[in-house]
Length: 406
Image 1 (cartoon, helix red, strand yellow):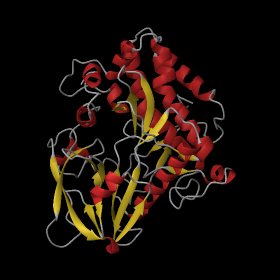
Image 2 (cartoon, helix red, strand yellow):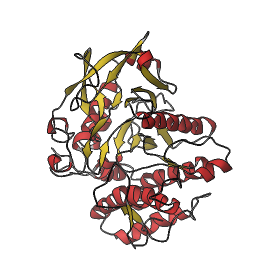
Image 3 (cartoon, rainbow, N blue to C red):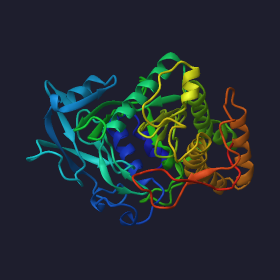
Image 4 (cartoon, rainbow, N blue to C red):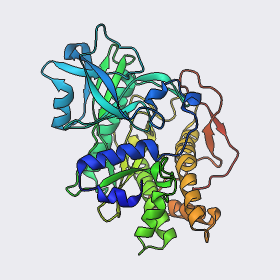
């Protein structure tokens, strides 16, 4: 899918949603054979699976569920809750947690994460994050009660940050309702994510996953990457300045703001962030989604007199230190998974620049951001171990390499 098609469809909410679904599935860097890295049935693969399928739900008494609410859109609440019952969804590749047949189905498409499903053909569409308790890449993609609670609480904290500060370059897809069936910490869960970014703007805009900026379209491989089209369209910038200060700068500014002001480490890899553009193809905001695995820094939050989280607090886990956690998020998830790929795409088309030159400018910009906290990082970088993980416990190793982008 090229930029022209995205801009042509930006005036219609139905087309915007369809284009987002297409980008999620087919403009994503190839991961190889789905069967080799996932226990999930190939029918539900974003890249190789069915275009649409049905996700089941059961009408469950609210008295039988732990309901965790943020500030949901009324339309979403009406869609998943009614009187004294709620619709509890589970992934169709797993057995039902309930006795008897499902009470209904929604037509969905998978997003890039596989376990998060986008409803289709509904008057009000939204995303359903399911408890997909199967190995997918490195982890079992579980969604238990403690994670549902953490996700919604983290969402509320980010909403507070946006409400009290003017962060014009940042928006988020709120996870405003979660259900847990069984024990409130270990029971199976489901989270509902709205697809209209907050703060809400009145003009039509298109969201593009960051991985879609540098990836080739599976069906139109002759198309230039959307990243390059955006740079060419915004020709009043020099290519390097636009790339470093806008496309990468949005990531850097968002990371620094939330670390320094909220003590939150955003995992801003290509799947968790999207670029929002207006009808002229001008980048407006970075859109953030998925709060389940976000870590917080208790020291910064104490200094800001902010409440602490119960889960994913830096420094309390035995197998990883504070410095290692900062490096894992920034050097591995953000830099290795996203920034390196974007720079490689940029220099492929703008051969007058070398990878090292571009990386140096990105690094210099990051260092010079006001209030950036740099002493939390180690001298070398850390990454996930390639060893199989037991019970989703993260194992990190020292790469012995100097950081590229900080």
